[in-house]
Structure formats: structure tokens, C-alpha cells
Image (cartoon, rainbow, N blue to C red):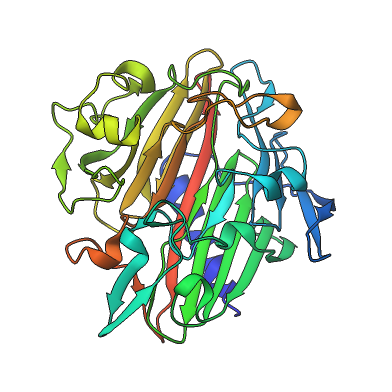
Length: 383
């Protein structure tokens, strides 16, 4: 698939949007190197790409799963520290990972009972989350070796990942051609652009699954992080974490993050929804229903002064508060990932949309181009 020109247009629009919001003009000073990250069981080698911008921000990404293994951001004193969870080596990602830093597809989040009907045909997907299908199945996009091409031109620098998903992979119909680009700017933004085409109608819902801890010490809890989500509604779930189909107001609930609120302020307050998710593991319906880039979430870590903003074209965002981290995973530098030591903000269409006619459609058809874009912007309370 060759859709690089479309990607460049999307990137230019993103820059115009951000510059129009008062950001300084982007001045890119790219730097990309690569090393071998490890060897897969079939003998293929995975590569680790190291990106550094002019401000001193760095990101390490591997072509195995498109995984962001490291991402540094400055604190209020200008000190850069790693703010994502992950492992030091490929073998650890191969052994066990809760999707740390990976590209998720074909379908991010859950599909009930691993089943959906489309154009009069019923499709059975791999089930890997109890009776349900989660994040693409047993071997989703997080577990494949992507073709990776670093780029460095007058507009941007980063990596383009491509993957050809064959018909029937994990039960999905159609041959799907996917392109995902990661771009880094000089003023500490990471821009993710997603594109795909198919030769048969198929659901698609791509996202990025990094776990963040803005304290710069990922052994710390994330409960003191202050979160804003621009959502007036969320999609309540059943005990299998599948949406009921309802859009419920956040007003007067534990899910109201319209003003900045510590993640831990209400997380253990009880109630059916928090009990089902063991905390927050819910899709929030973004208030602005357009497909333009707009602010979806903002996170502030008071000790370091770090701020992360998420802009997206997607209609929803999954806030996950690291409820299933339990101290059994040993991460980078020997850090034990304890309960709620990382959070995720996964921009997306809604879970189980193929089975929910009232939700925004996730069906891609031949002749159409799936596009999506998300931007992470990092700053501090002294900027």
C-alpha cells in the first residue's frame, strides 16, 4: 500500500491545527538511529529505533508490534525521564505483556463473544479475554513484525510501519493493508497517523496502547495524576466489560472528569461500574462529535509538573487505570509494576461497535480509506 502522500497531508493539517492553537511554529531537527532488538522464535530479527528531537526528548520504538519501549519527557526543571511502562528486551515482550506500548488491531478493545454479523454473514473471531475478543485476538497487530521505514525530510521525521493482514487472520474478513506512522516534532509532540484499505468489508479500530506514568518513576502509583477528559457521556459495561449500548451521562457520577480531578479521588468509591472494571476501564464519548483534531484529555502530574495532552480525530477514548497490574511483571531497570502504576488513554471508536448499531460504525469497505490521527503533546507547568 502506498498512501504516504495522504499521510503528509494529514501531518500538515495537524501542524496547522496546533500552530493555530498558539503553539510555536514547528522546527524539526531529526535524529534516528537503529540497533538490533532481538530475535523472534522464527529467526527474524526485530529492530529498535531511537529517535531524538532538538529539545532532548527521545523515543525508542521497535518494529515488533510497533511498540514504544521508552519515551522521555521533561519535568518542570528540564530533566528528561522515561514516562512509559515496558521492558528492556524483546524476550520479555514475547513472554508476557499487557499490550505495553503497542499498535492495536485489527480491532482495539472488545467484541462480545468474538462474534459479529456483516452483510448477512456471521464471523467467528479468536477469543482471548474470557468469552470475548480483545485487541485483535491471540496474535493481534501487537504481536507481528511490521515493515518499518524511517523517514527524514523537510516536513517531519519518524517511522512508517506497514503490515498486510491476510483474510481470515484471527477470523477477520478481507485482506487489510495497514500503514501507521509515528512522528516526533522539535517541541515534544508525537503524532500518530493510521490508514488502511481492504478488499472486503471488515471492522477496524486501530489505537496505541502505551501505559504512562508522568512521575518519571514508574514504581509510583498514578492515583495523584490529575485527569481531564472532554466527555459528557461514557459507555457503561456489563460484568464482562462489554458495553450495554447505553450512553450514560457523567454528571454526578465517578466518571465526571470534565474538570481536572485526581485519578484516585473516586476510584475506590464503589458502585457497579467501578466494581466491574476494578477501577476505570471504560470508553468515554468525546463531547465534540466532529472528526477534526480536538482536545480529548489532559493529564497533570503535580510532583514533576509534567503535562500530557491528547488530541484526536476519534469519537471515543478508553481510560484504563492499570487495574490489572498486580506486581507480577518486572519492567525496565528491574522496576516492579504494581497495581495502578500506569494509565492508558486509548483513542478509539467504541468497544463492540460491530454488534451495536447505535454506535459509530467501524466497518471499512472496499474503495474506502480508513484514516485516524492522534497527537500526544508533552509540556510542563512552567511552559
